[in-house]
Image (cartoon, rainbow, N blue to C red):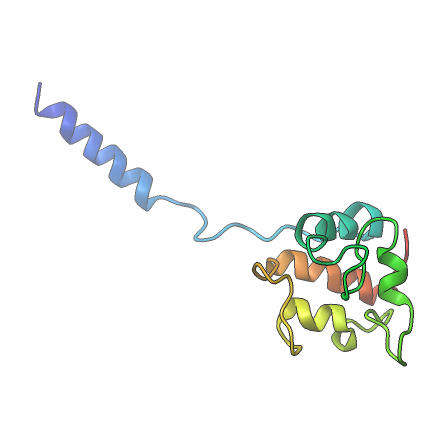
Length: 127
């Protein structure tokens, strides 16, 4: 009986370890309508406003100022070009295609990058 319990535990552990249905987590589906206030601003709040805040040289991404900071044309260029994520500075730096990579503490997950890409390609609305 004393030898049976460890054997059963080893079998149970082996079955558990080798029976994972998914090798990786399934992708989170993107919402039909990406909301700037509900989906995009929370990403900035969590990952960006440590550096992108009032008084910083980088665009201000705090709730009160972020949308205008992204879409306002400065020196002939806007950080976000509505309906054109691939040519938007925000998307370039988030995906590592620009000179800088943001956020500085590590790239956003692919699903969060896809969320921002969809928001931009859907017109970058302030909704």
